[in-house]
Image 1: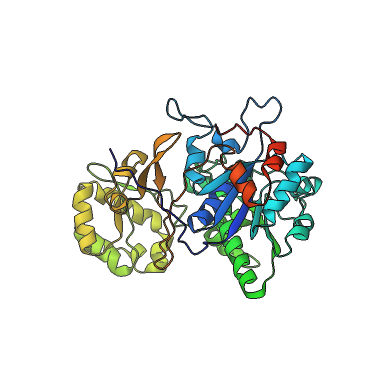
Image 2 (image 1 turned 90 degrees about the vertical axis):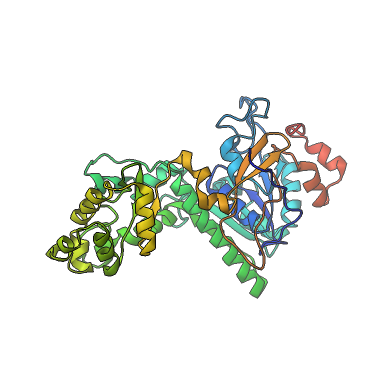
Length: 420
């Protein structure tokens, strides 16, 4: 059983002292605000109580999927646990005037407000940028949107599936395998990529505020973010007007671009330079065959014939075990790695050495693993200092910090017992 780690006593990251009121939910916003929280920001996650007929499942909907351990509360599902550490949960029904007033008092103490509530709904709640700016003139209001506000899709609902479809991401696999059926990638890539754009938006706006004292309204639209991400390489010859050739970077959509089978598993392998290709085929005993094949004489020609080259690799790698290949390839600095299945990850020697899957003891959910913040700051390290919160767990303490009296807090009472 893994050694249990202790929570850090305080924030030490580069965003220490930054206060973020977080109205985001699901994955897009929550993934982003956890990264910001890991970097030291104080994140106050404002969640709604259960709607009428909601079966008691209030707050961020990602609290509820999955299978918490027996005896653990149902509002600490695995996805929520993975992307909501280092936050405090505040329960407020923003459709009620007293809760709205309390929320604005909380915002008045903050540097940043993040929200993925559709902006029209924020206006109807009296929480537009103008409304918020009236109580906090230098606020950075970051709106996590599905689509940019100046296009015809503005204000429409958006989820990962929709953005994968709309961005062209769902079309990519057909370029690889010839199957024309569109398919989604089996990961919430649109939400997570957009979340990374949101992180950069917040840090950029904070830097601007540091220099000028000015807050601003910032929009992070999913469709534009993910389309930009997908087309970095796949715009390819269509970047020119008129186009000079194909969509997609052919090496990436090659059907033979995959981990290669060895005697006992699979290996990720990518010779890149001319020298590395020669070194690889020398190890394989096929150097003369490679050097005398005009399809592989230089990078440009090799790229045009990459499918044939990858097929040669596949034929070759099956002759040795994964360990044998890694020893040979790494000795010659040829990029290679053992392919891990999901079941292998927690035993990967590198990830174990860096304590990437760090074990903690949650007071309500028991032992769990938190993935270590991957970015290392030598002078201001990110850390883990709070467990993922129960729904509304810190409502009273956060609202007291914002200046509300016990009487004011009691008057709000939207499921005060949610975390008990």
